[in-house]
Image 1 (cartoon, rainbow over the protein chains, first blue to last red):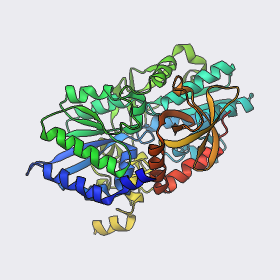
Image 2 (image 1 turned 180 degrees about the vertical axis):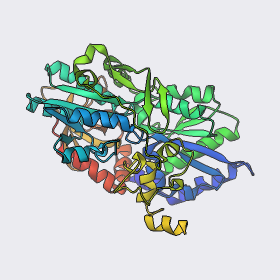
Image 3 (image 1 turned 45 degrees about the vertical axis):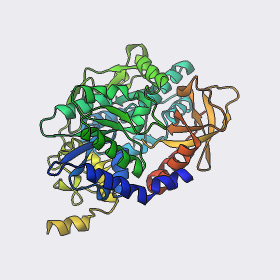
Image 4 (image 1 turned 90 degrees about the vertical axis):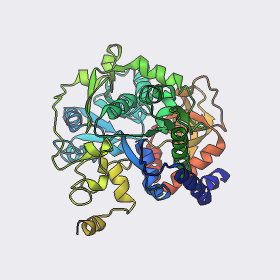
Length: 374
Length: 90
């Protein structure tokens, strides 16, 4: 466990912290977005903001797959789940996400057959065991999980299954970053690139961020020191007047990604013309759908999907949180009406959501929010 | 769901080349290694696992570091392990 001790080394963290502080130009503020929800989790778990000078602020990005699913899509999924002879299967994190007409949990309580699975392959097995049922997998996630859904569809085809389909909600990270860069209400100085998405897509797709927008991006690992080192690497680029894509997480992320995984995605799925993201609105070419050749495995073609658009609850500010415009605790319902037990918005549901991360690590409990509100 | 968890390959499936048995913190389950085609996955190799699929090969030191980190996460990792234990890929 030498590596762990090395990464946990508080002394190293302090040295990095001092170096970062020494690189700050007096009077200048630095805002870096950590795109990935896994990073947000580490930052709050380990109190990393305390290691950064006041001038350096980390802003949470949209990289939490559960958080960006719009309410309407969840309502569509529930409508499918409530069709006759359907078994809906989903990752556990989706169960409590509130839609316009309640959550998967609510629908299950009313009698729908909704089951949690670890892998889409478990869903496939349920389909094999229940030939008289129509088994649907609620496919969500960025490029980290899309290859798994695609591989499962290929497997279903190879097995000749006719009662398995996916409700495809896979999203792609690059268009979301583009949308944020084009957003007028946010000025960012650099990005911490998502570690595990990059194991699939590699580092090249980020090159427009440095080349066109002139912002540094560093693909970062998930250990506390990985994140501090990545902030240091961004600061060094700024200091030296460079804007490049760099890979801090080289021990896991290959520069070219996982080519086989990209091929599998491309075989089964294609880009949608547009897709709605919670908080970010409609973004062009930002999500995947099942290709015509695999229509038999596409729940959107097998079932009548209502396709309703549901506005987020007025009180909920997940949109601003996902764009990094406000911090979770600046939301009016944070920790009062909206808690992990009774979430109003998605950012409070998933453990990768910025609001849940703030709340769970005791930085802003309900009591402290009340205190602060006076 | 988005937690990548490291596992050690302990056994290749005798008939299905896309399957392998892995050990994750003592939990042994079958996973799909089809996305690492051409990387010659062998028993003793460490892989990063996402929702039942090996996404990349990693070295043992990285695996140890990642496991230590995941264990420090507590609940989130326990949930992921419990979900894996429920899994029954074949």
